[in-house]
Length: 308
Image 1 (tube, rainbow, N blue to C red):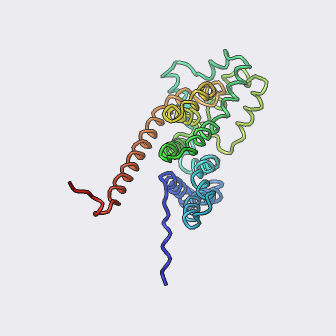
Image 2 (cartoon, rainbow, N blue to C red):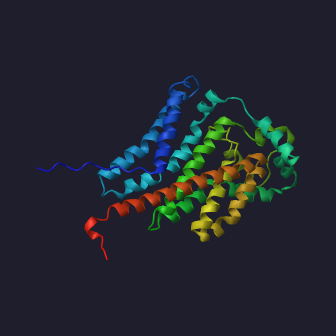
Image 3 (cartoon, rainbow, N blue to C red):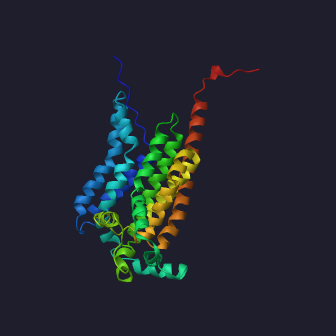
C-alpha cells in the first residue's frame, strides 16, 4: 500500500511579512507591553491575523480543488492592513507614548517657513474641500483597483511584486507610527485655524475621520505613501489605471494637507519610504525569477542534453 505524499505548502514573501510582524506585535503585547490598556485583546487579534496565512496556505495545498482558499490567502494583506491599524494603540502606549507633534511642527517651520495646513485653510474654498475630502477616501480603493487588474493577469510576477511592496510599505509605515506618534495639525494646531473645515459634505467626511480607534498615525503620511506606490506600479504595469487615478490621486495627496491630517514633513518623508520599499520589492522579484530559472535548469534530465 503506497503512503500518501506529504502536502507541500508554499508561502509568499507577503505571507512571511504578515506572520512575522503580527507575531512580533502579539508577543510584545503579551510580554513587555502587557500593562497597556487593551494589550491582551489586541495581542489576540494580532495573533489571529498572523496565523491566517499559515492556515489558508495549508488548507489551499490540502484541498487543491477549492480555488477560493488561494484567493483569500492571496488577498490576506488587505484585511490585515485595515484592521491592524486600529490595534496599534497599546503598542504605542507601551513603547512611545509621548506625541512628537511639536518636533514635526518645528521641522515644517525650518524647512518651509510656514504651517501648510494653516495657510491652506485660509485660501482653499469650501467646494474644493468637498472635492479633496472625497478624493481622500480613495486611500485603499486605488490600491485595490490596481491589485485586481494585476491579479487577473496570467502571470503572477507583477501582482506578487506589487503586493510585496504594499506589504513592506504597511509594515514600515506602522513601525514609523510607533516610533514617531503624532496626531496632526487638526488636533495639535487647532487654535491656529479660524474654524472647522467648511463645505457641503466636508463636515461629515471630516467627522468620520475622527472616529478610528488609533489616531496617532501622522508620520509619515500613509495616504501619500500608498498613493505614490500605486502611481509607480500603475505606470509600470497598467498605464490605463495610472491615467484614470492621476487626478483623484493627486487630490488625495493634496487632501492630506487641506484636510489638516498631516504636516508637510509627513508628505516629504513618505517619498524615501516608497523608494525603499519599491527597491526591496524589485530586488525580491528579481531574486524569485532567478530561482525559477535555476530550478527549471536543474529539472532538465541528463538524457535530454543534445551533444553535437
